[in-house]
Length: 124
Image: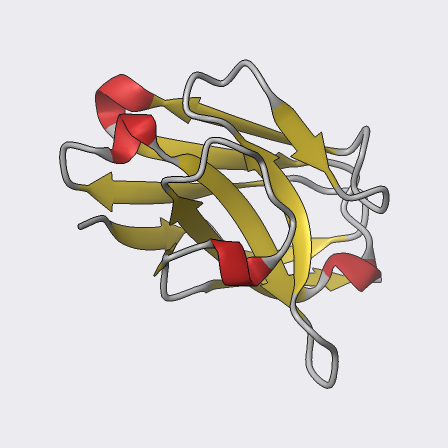
């Protein structure tokens, strides 16, 4: 069993940066694929970025590629999402998720474990 706690959200101006953290409990975190999803009001949940268990494979949504960086520190049982050059359209509730599948999948149904979400608001 893996429990996830998201943190690091907040209010930032366009062009600013935030770093989200996803702290996991459980000894098996290092074997999971981790991803970040987001959901804006009135919109469907969408994949943002994912990273495999070793950090050797990553995947990004085209809308964030070059601006966001996903990483993980298995010794600290924590994954991160560094968000730079933020835009108002990045405003959403961000969730981290984990799966024991070794592939960096982009569909939410593939992920068994979810954090509670952290709000990111980008003002123009």
